[in-house]
Amino acid sequence: MRFLILSDIHGNIDALDAVLARSPRDSYDRLLVLGDLVGYGANPNEVVDRIFDLTPDVMIRGNHDKVATGVEGADSFNRIAAEAARWTQKALTPENRERVAALPAGPKNVDRDVEVCHGSPFDEDAYVFDEEGAERALESAHRPICFFGHTHVPVAYIQKGADLSVLHPQPGGPETTVVNVVKKHRYLINPGSIGQPRDTDPRAAYATYDSRKQRIEVRRVPYRIDLAQQRITEAGLPESLAFRLGLGR
Ligand code: ZN
Image (tube, rainbow, N blue to C red; front, side, top):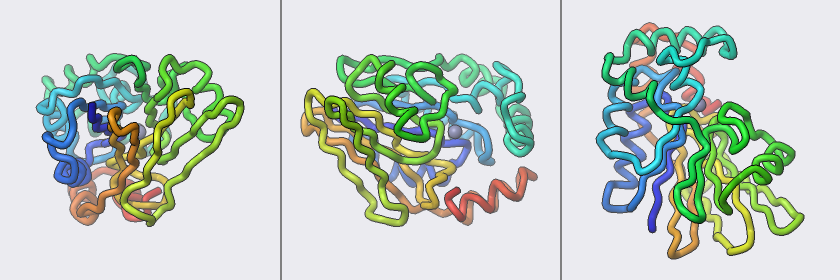
């Protein structure tokens, strides 16, 4: 089984289309989407339409999906995120607002080996930023391979018995970072963010998993950042959201 794993697209259609061009429909069997389809970027409807057209096998909501559809208030958001959420709520068509609002909370089991969550398996909104958070997440995971998002930083935590190792793909490094899956070990993998990377690498980030080859790949794809920035500016969204795309942070 070949999986395509997408997270934190954040209304960035230019980044999403670059990823889907690199990993077209015949390159995977099952699509997993880890939440935050919208928020920050200028093309929430295009992103929601594109993703729903692909009929993901498992898709969960992110915190921005909740706030931008009124499922939750913006109390936990900073000023700019809240402004973007308000903009997104107005921009979404009623149909898309309904579809995004109806997304289920994670975690969700995908099969016997794989589960997905937005933040962490114990709390959909919790951030896993370090080894301590990763250990807690791995303890509460239901499957040996757990894909998570939310931080916008690609990383692989690998637990071998009592040892935890961390693999950070090098910002600006190769387009593919490989994690070979070994039975008995446990994996907590963040594919990174498609629409708003924050690891100082502005390229779109995503992951694939081939269960037959026992191989996870965390991938980077360049895209037309200038177009995404221009759309943010033209939409009247906060200028800093365009600026940070160029920095990848
Ligand atoms: Zn996000």
